[in-house]
Length: 247
Length: 272
Ligand SMILES: Nc1ncnc2c1ncn2[C@@H]1O[C@H](COP(=O)(O)OP(=O)(O)OP(=O)(O)O)[C@@H](O)[C@H]1O
Ligand SMILES: [Mg+2]
Image (cartoon, rainbow over all chains, first blue to last red; front, top):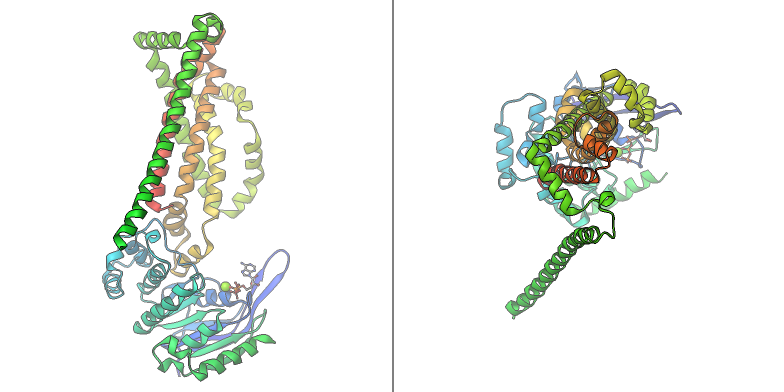
């Protein structure tokens, strides 16, 4: 069977003058098309490093990463961060077009249709500081989608939002991702968020990170994230991951 | 019911605005009053010979000196010279300083190699280099411009490099994940996001370059407002000294106001 993303025996070490930090050690897992994967693990264990490896920004110290059986190269990846990283001097439309400019794509069609589809049309001339936090995160997502990536990497994209906004924004972003049928890898330290969004959850250990457990859920059949959180399976899963992270 | 409530609110607000405006007006009034008081006192004290008019000059004599300078055509000649030195020095200093900052941002090794030299150059009082500059560039306008450049370039380089390096790492990561080259990162991210700092550098550099040009003219003295000040003090013509200083004051303020306006525009545009 061909997996969309194959991570095999990957390890990564940071070198500083003081010492060598093994951020990741022997991590292997596969991701299939349209899966929603969540990665949880203690703070500083190497989650962001793992995403940078998948994005091809850094090269693994050992092991290899393949997307559709090829070595990783930028364009197939869309990266989203905790900060929306919108460029304050560009308006919404031109922020969204950023990826197209960098990759020298002339075609505006996808950008315009996404803007239309996800209700940003009235805002397209506005500057980021005129938008709410949730709206900014939506713009950031659309910007990521515009280059038509196959895999979305989400590094704690909701953690900078306040609790109220977060509830709606999570559903909003999640709906867009499923509608656009993107494979997603979400890093979060909110276990509830991981369980309610993902169909598989990868639990990492303390540094050097190894995979402690990979757990599957069946919650994705339920549309509403809030409803998922009220199920029994949700609660047992959260408890289980909690325990995994304890020792 | 609802309406009356909102009316109360707006009444209160109107009151607040009124208070705010009257406070602002009072401040403006005091500022102007202080200036007028100062000028009047100066004039009266020199007229009544409490202060020696030869040492302190006087507002009326300053006015007549300036009008003589104007009718003889000297006024705009000297202003033109000092202004062009200052502007050329300012533009070159800020331009070159920014280019150096870009090079240093681009190449980490270069940054490390040049670091101690920049620190020394930054702490050195640039005026100390005056005599050397005059020997190298001649006793003319070039030397004065070099002086301006020297004074503004280091601060520009340091501030801009600082701005470049403080650009958020995840924004760089974002561009890298899209496969952007270093040049693209510079052009699309580093330079535009350093615009606010650039404008505040302009604000500092504009003052600095006046220091450079006037200092230069003190040393070399052939023409310009600085020359008039030095010349006036040598021949004990305090009227000329005071007039030139006053003109300088006005010019420097106007130039500063321009930059401050630019800053306001940039900030408004970016919602800072
Ligand atoms: N550029 C770097 N140089 C040296 N060490 C680094 C570098 N980047 C990260 N590290 C170290 O590698 C480890 C993993 O970092 P990483 O950012 O991947 O962790 P994380 O799981 O994303 O943490 P967090 O939960 O805080 O986001 C950390 O201990 C960190 O100190
Ligand atoms: Mg992280």
